[in-house]
Length: 266
Image (cartoon, rainbow, N blue to C red):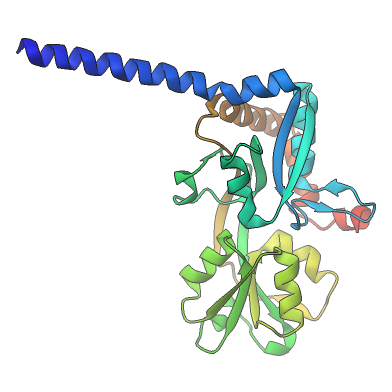
């Protein structure tokens, strides 16, 4: 019995030391930000209206505005790093970036590598195609002989694999714009994306339409490394703050729920 008690006490001590070590690691990213005066954020290279380069050559978009606002309120410099979609998580895991700010779904598989914030905004995933293809509903695409396109290693590709099981999937590294061009060029029959991202592309090409119905809805959030719990709590707190004071809602309405941004940035 004494042996069991000693083992229990030893286990408690080890767990306590592990917890304290975890806390120390959790604060390291925030400490680095404070010391350097820089918040390093990984963003997707081509992803309007979330993150893109506008007509003036300036990096802009929904997540850029959110991160610029947060960095300003923190009193630090925002440093943006551009990656294609599949490079976002590796950039964070390797320590090159402090945060991933993108329209990323907090899937169970991704949670094995990073920790996500609470949802920042939400997406309606849809299917789109050339009008001449004759598709009416997104379900019409789910059949043999049809090829659908989606951003490589994205939740859109996962949606296609889950809901369009009969169709053939082709993935593109260049994000929604490359998938859209593949549809226009006839290299694929349809594409999978979120309604907001496709709205801006379709407004520039009336030959493409969104098919009827919503495939599914997903929460979208930002991500940090598992050792960055201080930064994670700071992000969640900040999102609550700007949600309650109305700033987040204004940005989401401008960038995500409308195409108003096109007149200013395209």
